[in-house]
Length: 122
Length: 308
Image (tube, rainbow over all chains, first blue to last red; front, side, top):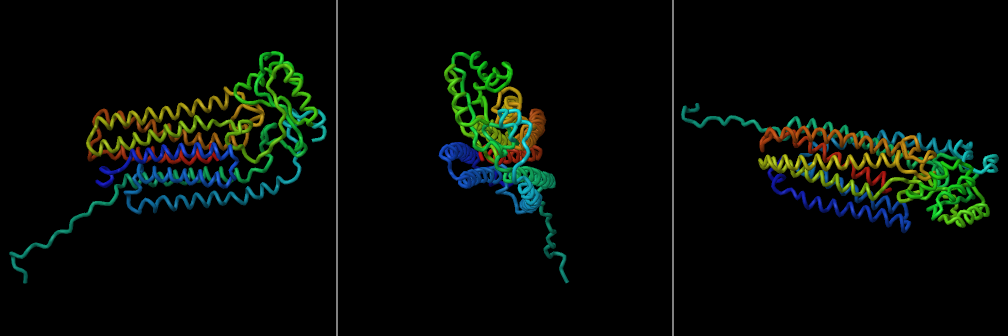
């Protein structure tokens, strides 16, 4: 840990930025839902703000900004391997969606809630 | 030949390593944690994107087959008006349930709007609405709305409190600030401020965890959730895929917060004994790295699970 870090780290400024971004996220999500933004726009805005906040915490509070490149040698492969695991799930989910196409048998819950005529038809 | 008075060959000085083994070990641990949480959050995203349309609706429990119910309507009550018992009796008659169950539905309107009866044609729904409205109840007829996943702010399918959790996110960020100030204090040799900021971090972290426990309790036991959230009106891991994902992700994060609080409490007790100094404070730094990582993960979880 360097002298630069200990003497000049702008912790309170970062805190204020995090606070503002949290408020922005909160109101963005609220109004995006209220005004029915396209889902992609909602996701994009929120993910950008969340990643900015995460990057600020990592860079300043975890001092990644002041560390050597060796930190990335540990973190990047971990992220890549985790992404591979997650991407490996995608085909299974795709197959699952294909299997669930078409009318499915009625569940017990439907039968219990629907009126008698509906239950007989389902 | 070199004379005896020649300047001696300079002995090579040992450069200190750029980083301590302890810090490398901590980052290796954090890398495994990155894998864990990336896997967890990534799996959630894949499961959500793969969830079929119709998995959730405003009138029926998650997972109900809605293929025969697409054009149906439901009667939704948002308040009993003055005559709670009378309205409950009408609800019991309409829904074909006992009075106790009907009373729970009527009283559940204090928390959220409740479905009286669903799967009706429009004429039948309007007739039931008129009957309940005549008794003073606040009722409406709504068409069946389906979705592949519970969207935020839609109380009929999503029971999560964004207001409370936004506050909790702010609280956890505050604890990260006090943690980094604790480290800064001991780097300057200020043992008193180290203890003070460590105590603040432990207390603020405990508040975060307490709010999460309260949230769990309300979701799983106290609040009477709408039928679109769960068939038993309580949001639990068994309620739906959304429920199991929510409790798995936030539960694992909560366990990490708990571990962080225990660790920081021990370091706080050590700090009271004056164990740490400006030159020897590796434990504070390592615990701080862990705590900030937990904060970082929550920032992502809050966005992915609650807001999107």
